[in-house]
Amino acid sequence: MDYLRLAAAAVFGAGLGLSAGVFSYYILRLAKIPHLALPRREREEMPLVLRRFLNKENEEDELPPWLKRWSERTSFMLKRSGVRVPVMRYLVGLLVGGVGGFVAGVILMKNLPAAVILALVIALAPDVVLIGRVQNRRNKIIEQLAAAVRIFAAEFGDTPQVPRALSITARKVPSPLGDILRQADTDLAAGKSIDEVCLFLMKELDFEYGRMFVQLLRLAWDDAAVRPLFTRLAGRIANLQGLIYKNASGMAYGRFMGMLVNALILPEFLLMRSLIPETGYFLVYNPIGRLLVVVCFLSILVGMLLDRALSGVET
Image (cartoon, rainbow, N blue to C red):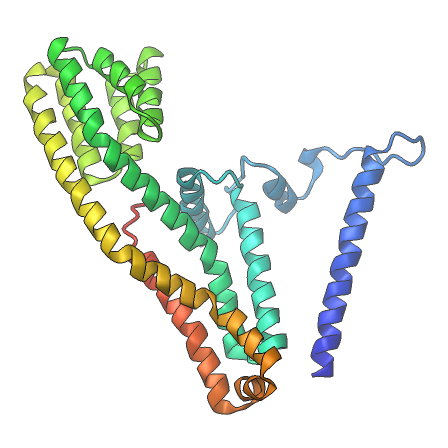
């Protein structure tokens, strides 16, 4: 085990040295002292990996197909969740967190299977958080859509003009749905066709009743007789909203308690090991204790995967 401590110390020392070197490099770049200031290197001359990491407009043409699919999905999730982080930086953060979890599992628990599972848990945790944020945003849009459809139906009934009704609705509806409608109103004012605007709305309101609203909007552009359908759609969205609230209230407590218990597993392990050495020895060296640690961390991983699969987020 002394070799593990030496390896950990070496990794820590290398990290400190690298950090000091990077800090000194940027200090010299910013220095105004002649003969000491380093020449500024243009971003175009940097290696492709560094350009992707530093540039928010990531170039993905040379990525493998599986990584490109992951990048597109993650970029979508980051945008919808409101997290302004480039995909490559997000990936680097996942890798660093996974490696840190693996090293912690090997050094603290001396349990290779548990270390691998802990690395996967730490790497998947941000994705679960993103899915939760996207789901909350989607529920908020559904909550606002019923009122937005009623406002649109009332304005469209007074003056059967889709641009005017859409513009008034966009001004009265708050974010996040209001931002989507205001962008559609801006696109119409800029001269885009109704088909282009509806395609944008289809992507932003990518759930059942959102797509129905966009389809009715397109029909209303050519036929004002569809106005009563907006009122019926608003009623259905209100019923859906009630079901969402009922399901959320029924599952919120159980989900919170499950996440809390899973999050406390590692702190409890460290606390037991420090306060009760016999328990720590059992969990670290006894085969049954080691298996128990693996099962505990495996339960976290399975819970995260189930939560991710049942989240209902459409990407």
